[in-house]
Image (tube, rainbow, N blue to C red; front, top):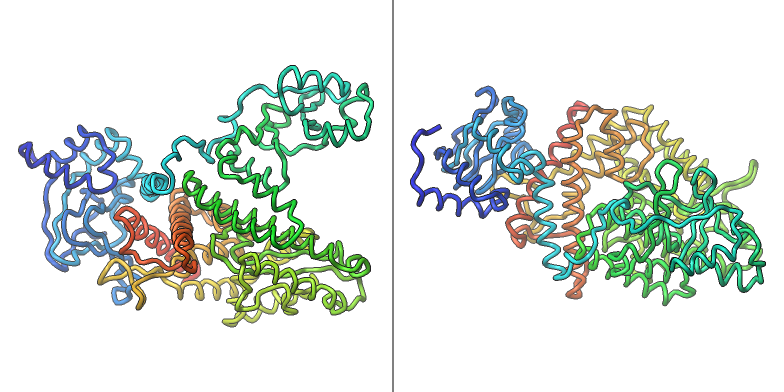
Length: 637
């Protein structure tokens, strides 16, 4: 550390330079002065090593002032572009080594003549204690950058977003009052009088231990009391809705929104253990009411023709814009979009089933399950998605699967066509339930999956990336569950197949470049789905299969597999944050294209991003590389 402090003019000029970049733009002035007064300026000529594992425990924190630094991930692979990543002006290193008080694991080399601000390790540690924004950035780098990006997005999409309640709020934070309850034996008249006196729209029925056993709402009065001429002296348990849906206090507002959207409920009970602690109504979810989630869900369930469903499909896409303005996280937004698309698909199936001749409907009803595949199966649909689906059905012993398939295929074709009319294009690869190859009895699916696993050829590996993400959407979910349990055991017991899947996944490398930030195509763009999201999706699927997991969502798979594979929470969180940013970027891109009438896709020109999003994109690709490096090590590739 220099004993002599720099002159104030130099301090202020350096601060102005640093505050163009995160996290310095959020730090207090006095902490920036503390930082700048302790900085040295280092120069490194082109090709010179700035930092390497041979130098021992990291002693300095580097901020690139001018130039660029290449990180070499693996010295044995210096001829491979995938072994490099680039750091440019405003970026910092080596955070992990400094925080862990260890040596770096990569070589940092000046790509060109480069100047770096350098802060001694003891001053770095002191700054961690002084500045909360600096500590947050260093310990949660990509998450911290994402929060800054989210604020910019909200400002861009909506001037009033700060007035809206966050979908991330736990239910415990939005409970407005103690829930009013009664016993099952309470007369209906007493319940109605209490509801009127207290001006409430619902009554919760609880047992002696305050466990909810039912709910009665104003909506029930017409259907169950007035129209039926029910005796008002009868106990409320005769007209209540039994077994109400409950959520714990730590569940989020969007969890309650999903329940309301899926089932058309206006209320969700909050319980701790088995005891009632609160009730959340649609009015409590003010933010949801503003974006119309329940309204869209209600319209979908009540739609009686294709034109109504086509309008609802448009409303779902508009909902995406409103929720971006509200600051809804990518994980929640893709789940909400997938849930509403589920409702749309379900309603199409119901209408097509109802249109069948009675004998044909009787022959197939209750015997099949409509499967969601691909991104829909993972609850990761964005605004632009085609349809991937299939059917699994049950046949009695000795029955020919082909006979039931012949009845199901015409129905599946009408469903696929209706989905196409609603904006979900027919799959160009014909991965649809109307294809006889993907309308199979349970045993036939098991035989097909077993063949893919045992053969492991390129076509089988490609099919696995689509079909192994299946989940039940309509009908006999027990058939899907049985297939999932069978697959989990079969895949876990076949490490050779998982090794082949890992090798196949590693052919798709994140597009980080050596000569510039990103490797771009001829159209100066990159594919956020293929080059960005897919490495995370593929790795999560492999790890899930390897550990006997049953989840289909990418983040759920990583979270379930991480403890079993002894992957640290910090490492898994970095992967999750990177994946979510890529999803968010896809959603924003698709919405912007849709607004100007262009076909939606997943391609983006990084030069069109602001500096913050460009920086996060680079970090997201680095996280993808780290995950692939882990995959390489685990499968010795």
